[in-house]
Length: 584
Image (cartoon, rainbow, N blue to C red; front, side, top):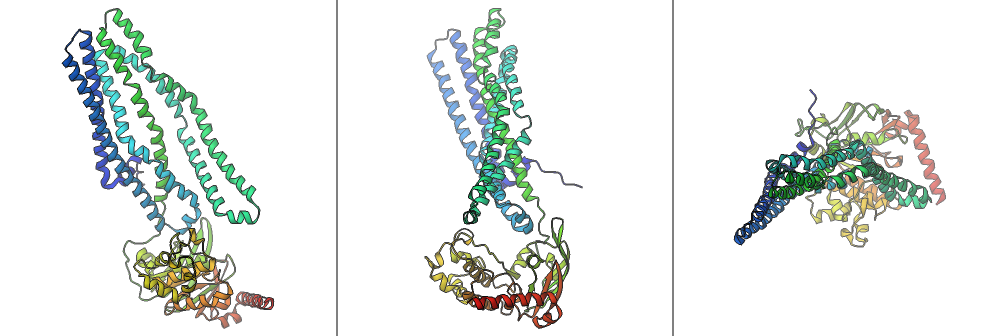
């Protein structure tokens, strides 16, 4: 049976957690605010009656005036405490929403994250979630008070003179009919602005991230045109929507507050024909002034409620993504660190990339995967690293299917070093510590010496305390890779996957890096993907991949004799090296 979709309010209460009671007390105090704001109307009515009846007792007037002042003070106290509690609950909601999103992204396949622009995630998890704070924090106490207050006043109004009460509603009804005119096509119009905002964010992030390439190739004008086009579309989506709403909004704001347009003439008529007393007429005038304003404020939140619904749907769109199929607790323990792929098939969307991969890597062995660009080498590495789930077939570690292992247990088994490893905008020390959060500063220094990083780190402006910049942008590609290898060494996982880990290394530092890798993988199961075949020719086993299939495997000498593709790749590699030497 299909699971019933949760309402927006159910999601909000779920994210509120233990702070739900803060919302409950916020509502109760909001109702207290309503009650103490209504009391002055009754007291004013008493004062008006006394005055018109000729009562000259000053003390009675003073007592009622003091009660009015006290009522307003208590009402403001209730309102202040109510909004304080609702703000506390709301900040908990926002925090829990963001935590849920970030934890979800750690559990979903990498493909979903790669297919969604960083600008979209940033927009949803930062700006969009933040934009509902004001509404959530104020809507419960203020919507409650601004809606309940006029209702109670109107009930009291009907007890005095139902005719004038009905006449007072006429401008309000006409005004709110105009308001509902603004709500025509609200959802598609709002979704249009949401999409325009996403496009603008994506264009801005793309422009900023690619500014170096844009400047280098003189594409500033054309690239900026894409951003300005997105900005204009963003502005036009709001402008066109506001144009549709402007007439309705003007009518609502003009007509709704003027309840006196009907109360004054008809009330005067009823006084004249003797069906309404003057004190009651004045009281009706006072009451009519207290209806429209709060209702306008209350209904102004309906637009924000609609926005909350759309934003919650966006967040739920992330939370509903399928996760990697892993148990909370491992059901089996691998007997060793061997790796086996059996008939593994995998594809992005509807396009199959791998067509039944079979591989066996013995524990403690060095295994290389080579092949032309786009053949599926990195995809195999990412599947072994569990960044995606296979579409069919299985991947086993030590005879245990990785789907039977918890992500925590599995991650302790794997150290993955990619071609373009990400460094956080933190110090060099803290980036290396990502490999083992419990490592001491001495452990970090020791591992950098083993990985050949220590000398270049000490030459940086602040040594280990140097901030590497966003994505490690303050360092060269080779420096980022060496820090990534140090981070992997600190993790000390029994299985190491190197996906083009030496791609950015210059010839001077390649020997250092190869020596670092040798220390990193000592006694471990290694899978290495490389274009430089000379770096993997001594591997225990080399797998040749072409067009998503393993076409051959064996040692270097065997493949030179049995696999024409490998032989051609080797000859091309050797000829390039010879050409480089001649150029030197």
